Length: 288
Image 1 (spheres, rainbow, N blue to C red):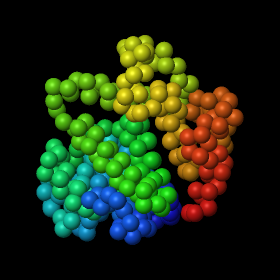
Image 2: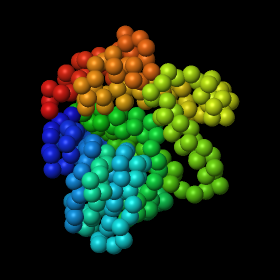
Image 3: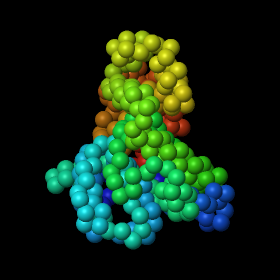
Image 4: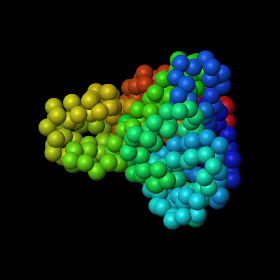
C-alpha cells in the first residue's frame, strides 16, 4: 500500500491502494474497487467537489459536515457513512480546527445501481451505522486483498465491501428488530472499549449483563471469530496504528494494550498480521 505525506490534507501519513489489474481479468465486474484510501487525521475541507466515479466514505473518528448541491449542511460524526455520486457537487470535511479519520472506496460497475434501487440506502444523506471492531477488521481485510494484486483477491475485496455496506445499511434501519441491533452495537462498542486492559470474558459478561455462553455465540455469529480472537484482532488493529504513527516501543505498545508479556504479544501480532511488530513497522515506514 502506498503511503505518502500531503500536509494540505493531513499531518499524518496517508495510505492509498489502487487497482493495478486489467478489469478484464476480474470475475466480478459488476462491482470493481478502483482504489481505496485511509486518510487519518484529515484536516482539509473541500468545497464544490465533483467526482467521476461512485465512492463510499466511512468516518472512523472525528467530526465534520457534508453537504450536497449547496443544500442543507449535515452533521458527520464517528461511525458516519455517506456516498459520492458522479456529477454532483459536494462540500465536505472536518470542522474548522478539527479532524476526521476517513476511509474511502472508489467503485464502478452496475452493482451500485442495484443497491440504490433495492437496498434502503439513504442517498445524499449521512447515515450512522456506528463504529465497531468488526467493521475495522473487514476494512483491513479489504485493503490487504486489494494490496495483493491478484484478480481473485480483487474480486474477494469487492464482495467483502458489498457485504460490509449491506451490514452498515441494515444497522441504519429502524425495525422491530431494532432493539436487538442496538444491543449488538452496544456490545461491539463495549468490546472496543477493552483495548487498553487485559480481557476477562467472564467479568465482561457480568458487567454488561450477558450470559457468557450467549456472549461467545453472539460475537462468533456476527464477526466470524471466537470471542478471544476477536478481541485480540481488535487490539492488533490498534497496535498497527501505534507502530505506524507513534515512536512507542513494542513493549510499550504491548503494555498499553493489556499484554504484560511482550513475547506473547509479538507472537499474536505475527499470527494475525503475518509479520513481527518491528518488521511491520520497518516495512510500512520504508514506503513512505
